[in-house]
Image 1 (spheres, rainbow, N blue to C red):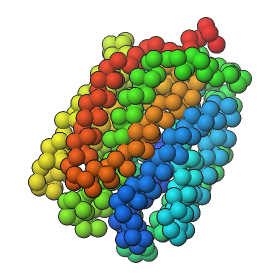
Image 2: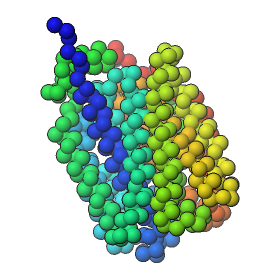
Image 3: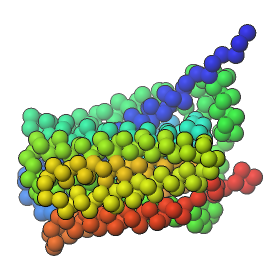
Image 4: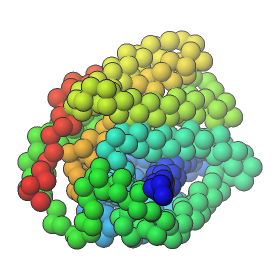
Length: 424
């Protein structure tokens, strides 16, 4: 009697995680497309709106490490259910804002809720995905987030034109609540706990990850984590990435209307195109890194070569996109720049799996905290630069940050675990 083929429960887990990533970015991009309408209704200045955009990222940044810790201690099943429910409620409550302070509070609480999403989601895959699937998994999950972000501007514009700017916040909040219910019903913290996993798939996962039966909660080795120069280099690189991504997620729709002369409907279309290009970069970056690693047997080189190439591509194309006079050429050049920027993401998030092991949630939360500190200061700096010097200077600064990101990633070693198996 032949052995049964392995089931593919780990792939369903992966696609559920992809859906979670989509929802995170749909929920955070809703406000970006609504910025011009919100500014008009409340009379907010650029600086005031920059503060509202930044407060989400400050909450997100400050609670990343607690969020990653929560996932490592509570387990991804319960932790993700809890935080997705939390942030979905505050996504909807953003629509109930009546002044500047109320919107600040709701966006802060929304950011606190989303803070643990990526670290816990990374932890949720650490015992399910094979090492040879990690780059692909991180690439496709982040591609999912960018698909969500790319699809959102046209939808938000339609909702605004039909029902007003508050409607999309209610709709996207409800999507998160539905996902949380499905996740809790299907996901389990280890393959051994899932009834749908057959022995062949379990042996495949156990043989590759060597985590069979490791359900006991382990103390997080904070000393080793915080002493890791490798992790801090990775985190500084992600600071550069987060700063640049915030420029496009938070302000690009407004830039298209204010600086490039597009109307509301045109903005909904053209704001989504770079994010679709970024989706392709997310998918290709993780997949290509895995293929290079398999071909060369050199994980350090495989992670590095893809990410450095992506950062240099972004740095090189942001400048002509900013300086070109034709608004449509600006959009297409921006597509290439964002493609390059996103080429780095799947690789960046694969590295915490490579070096973090069972503590990938905590390790990735440190990296993501630094990335979101960059994202948190970006909206306010952009608002200041626009008011003082015009729209070109923020993008020139973003190009420089991408060049710095390339230098930093060239010093990251994905083959060097923070905690070696013998120490556990």
